[in-house]
Length: 168
Length: 105
Image (cartoon, rainbow over all chains, first blue to last red; front, side, top):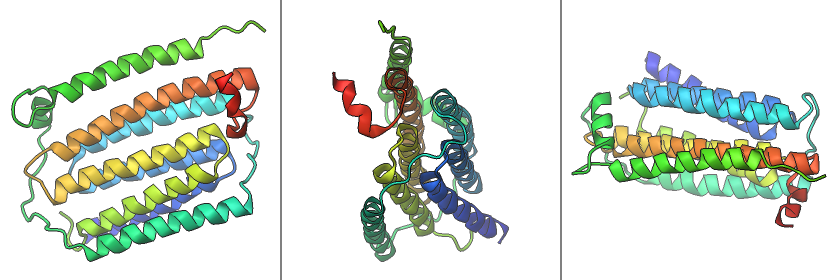
C-alpha cells in the first residue's frame, strides 16, 4: 500500500515537472524542473528494487548532466531573463501532435495484454558487471568498448570545439 | 513488484514524459531548452527498458544494460551539445535556433 501511494506521488511529480520543464519561460527554472523529473525517475527505480540503476540515474543524470546544463545556462543566459514564448499557432500544432501521439500509444498499451512474469528476482550488481565484461552468452563487451571509445571521442571533441580561437 | 501497479501504469508515465518532451522539442526556440526536451525523451526510453526488464523478462539483465548504455550516450551527447552551444554563443551572442543556420558558413 505504501509503495502504491509512493508510485502515484512519483508519477504526479514526473508528469507535472516534465510539463513545467518544457513550458517554463526561465531557463534556469526549466533546468531545476528537469532535475526533479530525473530524481523522481530514480525514485521509480528504487521502488521496483533496482538500486544500481537508481544510483546510476542519480550520479550521471541528476549529478552530471544537470550540472553541465546549469553551467551552460550560466555561461549563455542572463539569469532571470524570460525567453520568448512560442507563437499560438505553433503551440496548438505541437500540442495536437503530442496529444495525438500520446493518445495512440496509450490506447495501444491499454489494449495489449502483457504477459507479466510472476517471479520476483532481486538485482545482483555483480552479475551486471560480469555481463558487461563477458564475451560469451549474454555478454556485452563489444558495446561496452564502443561506449568507452564514444565517451573518449566526445570528451576530446567537446574540448576542441569549446576552445576554438577567434580572429575577430 | 508493487501490489496493484502493473506494467501498463509505468508505460503510461513514460509515454506522457516522451510526448511532453516532443512538445518541448517542437515549441522551444532556445538551444538549451531544446536540449532539456531531448533529455526528457531519452529518460522516458530508459524507463521503458528498465520496466520491461523488471516486469516481463526478470531472468535476464538486457534491459538494464541497455539503459546504462542509453545513459552513457546521453552524457556524451550533452557534453558535445553544450560545447557547441557555448561556441555558438561566443560567435553569435545568442542561443536562438532561428539564427543557427549561420553555423554552416
